[in-house]
Length: 327
Image 1 (cartoon, rainbow, N blue to C red):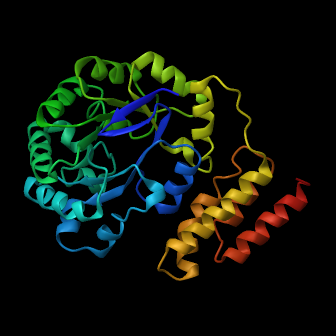
Image 2 (image 1 turned 90 degrees about the vertical axis):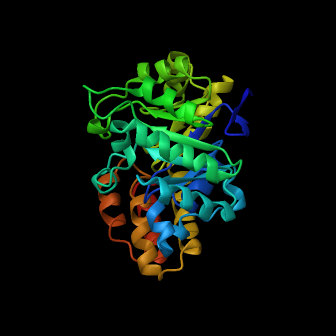
């Protein structure tokens, strides 16, 4: 299989797992790596929170061996905090550090961070320069959008500035901030960025199958595809994409396999958590309810999943489903 080098890491040219706050935790990343994600990035970490000693921010920086190659992602809008935060990340030994310039959520954007930086490219450039200097040789990458809104699409200009400031790779989500996650991703902007810069470009947005991954590679020329929401309850998408890339037939897992993996993911969440079982299960609920999308009884299963308080309840729910639908 063809390989590609991204931020110093040689990986199969299949698909990477997108960084997703409150979703792509340690258990999620390990699961996706086991199913073929070629690389992954941690959840969003506040540069200022890390500098102020936030325990929550520091916990998000943990990297376990099965997750590598793995980067850590920072967000912020103040160069001095970003520079210091990068130094604080180094003891965790990330394979690269990613600066988030694409997150659309208000609590990030209202700080002038995330996709708000698409409106202030000079500030974004300064943040990146300071981060690269502080990283001491660890590659620094950027994740961006196509612009703030449809009237201010500036992906190419912005990407050129990021390359000049030292970005080792650039991920482009093919939507503006104002689109959030609605509408269609504009892959033409990913292609335009790829044509404009010499560093590797990772394409993100609307890849939900092996076929769509191949289309993104063909239509954009990107060096690597990144998958986010399509992985919800479906870590097998990385296997599907790998099969598509290699031209091999792919057989999707059956319901019993899906539910077995759901339970394993819950066990991993509980094992990784320092919280009580009930509190950890609250975090696991959202993962459980994704596994049966589009299948008979999925609505009732989701409703029950949203109220799980223990692993025993999750096991009972799975067994009840299997018996009811004679799987």
